[in-house]
Image (cartoon, rainbow, N blue to C red; front, top):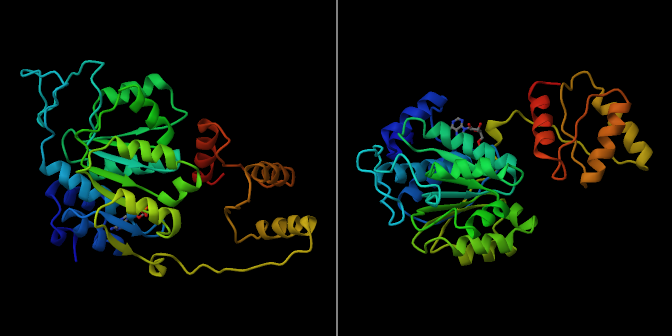
Amino acid sequence: MTFAEIGLHPALLAALADCGYSQPTSVQKQAIPAALAGNDLLVSSPTGSGKTAAFVLPALNLIASEQRPQSAKAPAHPTNTLRRGRPATRRPCTPAQPRMLVLTPTRELALQVTAASDRYAVRLRQVNAVAILGGMPYAKQMELLARNPEILVATPGRLIDHLNSGKIDFSLLRVLVLDEADRMLDMGFIEDIETIVGATPTTRQTLLFSATLEGTVGELAQRMTRCALRIRVDAVADRHEPIEQRMHFVDDQAHKNRLLDFLLRDAAIGQALVFTATRRDADLLTDRLNLAGLNAAALHGDMHQGARNRTLAAMRRGQ
Ligand code: AMP
């Protein structure tokens, strides 16, 4: 099955060709046609399986095929109107009226989803994505919302602030995506999610992505979707080089430290990700590795966004 056979809008097909995607991944083959048919979806699919495109593409297809209705609140500017029928200039007090909302657990994921949406929407006129995140200056966010983006990608907490202050109006919302729903629940966002979902129209389409669909996530999914189709894609071995997995038993902390130093000094390891149980452990271990002469940087939720971005940028540069 190709993207063209799935029946996506020509502007999306062109953008996918620009991205170099020759064919849909397994989750895309299952989720895109089901979402285009208007179904709510519950999808469990691993990171790296192409799940972002699996929810962004059907939503963009819908946005591309429907003109956003003129809101009663949005002032009409007949001589100053963009092609999609939206006023080019808006009063500062006019709330943003997105047609797609993606909720993500972390700022990093929100930024990735925003960048991916912009890549896929690049050939659709006037369709753009905006990220609303904690830690971003408020004035900057007001400016982004004033552009009345079609797509909002947000972490739940900050979105609630804007919702409460009337800066966002979900009455035109068509598609709601809960990305990594299980992680959002682990992070305690349940009440925020309930409030946000309660502010969206019941006629929306809901696409929920989660590593697991059992337990609390299953209950949330039950409440927030209607007759949802379940799609499960297992880890795709063919998209990754075989990964060797090893388990080491250690006697104590000192032994563990020595073993980690030994493993990280392996010349075959250019870069490594080391996961720790707590944020504090991440900082302590980073200090210890740096003292031991290895270039290490921490990444966790207690850090300011600027510091997190610096770690990711240094990782990308191979530093
Ligand atoms: P995701 O699981 O959404 O984080 O995507 C993982 C990676 O796969 C991203 O770098 C995407 O750009 C890429 N990707 C998504 N769909 C396709 C596709 N159909 N063909 C090739 N690469 C893809």
